[in-house]
Image (cartoon, rainbow, N blue to C red; front, side, top):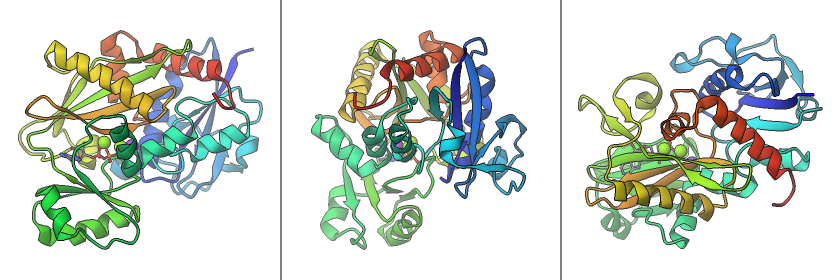
Length: 347
Ligand code: ADP
Ligand code: MG
Ligand code: MG
Ligand code: K
């Protein structure tokens, strides 16, 4: 019989719609000869539902599909939704999905799944912990200060250490949600307040001047080999956008992608090597997108790892593999085969 793949999408995070959009693209591209797809939706309230076809969803925020305000769904318990499934593709972005929580549920159920395990997912989701682990590996992560739950604001010493401008971010979020670029210390506390609407833990980073944003797609193959794609670059066009915010990501056309990025061969080689090191430093498995800041001096700063990046055919992760020689359908098959080869349990 065919391999039954549950594609779990939607979810409780602020990236609910982005996840629905990813699912909408993945479903029709899964190899129908080998895989039987079981779409499993999770509403923004956290209700699991079977039989939700992401291609039939209506548009919500940012004109993206959503499971919001759907009263016609048939609610199920997670265990019921995943009964008789061989492998799970947790196509969820952000909290309660990309952060180790659903991975924990699947471990308990003994089900293999696409992507990193509990620890790596949680570590990559938390920008503060991710940076500490990357630093321990000897990788440059730039200057930052972690504001724990009790610290109200930056001390004068910390302000001096970082300098202006700074980026103020929730430690555990994504899609640029809750992030503010601050160019005047008078605006700092409002930015911290905004970040804390998403996470009590806040990270404040020195802005990298004239930064180039480079992303690499890292993939684990069924035989355990781990490889990084060619680098892709996100470039602001028309001088309108100052940084890669939510609108630039999903709404307007203020950023363009160069895939592959126009870089000297030695920089490309260093990026590919460092992306795999970062993947291993967080104990990732399956896949991860490793996002870099390239400085004017061609220094590599690891910004973050995204363990379940956007997955439409025009998203950076699949595009970067396409440019490296692996098409969208083959990529999806590889991800699922790697998950099955790994099995469940400690590994
Ligand atoms: P998210 O997980 O929401 O994508 P990021 O840490 O990647 O959060 O930040 C989002 C965007 O903000 C980046 O892609 C970049 O455009 C900008 N940015 C974040 N931190 C810095 C920094 N230290 N220097 C320059 N730009 C930054
Ligand atoms: Mg992110
Ligand atoms: Mg990012
Ligand atoms: K992340």
